[in-house]
Length: 164
Image 1 (cartoon, rainbow, N blue to C red):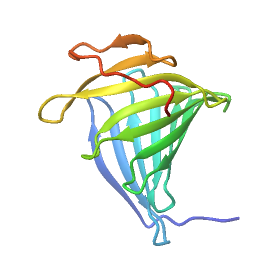
Image 2: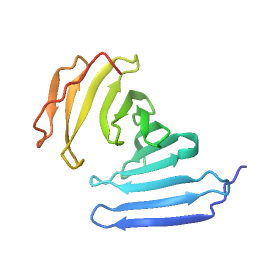
Image 3: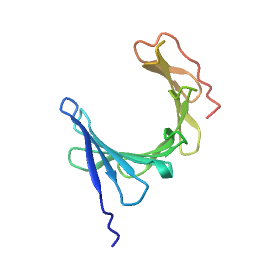
């Protein structure tokens, strides 16, 4: 049986108002895996496991009963940001894929959700204020038709439905 020794467990914060617990686990190998656990307002818990040297991350959300609600398997880019993700439901069935785009400052600008057949289902275009703080987003369907927008976003950025 392979047993992984844990050298250090560092609690980086516990916030009672949101119940957020962040931890980092270092393995004996030179490639650390960072684990963050968030307690969500609805009682679910999301565990993020970042394996930056291998450009992977997994986010698993479990219900109050401990059963998996969903899982996202991410591929990370060279800057260790989410490049793409596969979103799975509670029975580990693929629900959709997601591609992420960033601007030259590293801010997330667009999220494209694809079906299992690679067709565009939705695009989410993020909006920022003049100082670079995210202020909301606009959602488009697979054809580029406007669906909804968060309050505070004053313009409707265009989404190109044909491109991933």
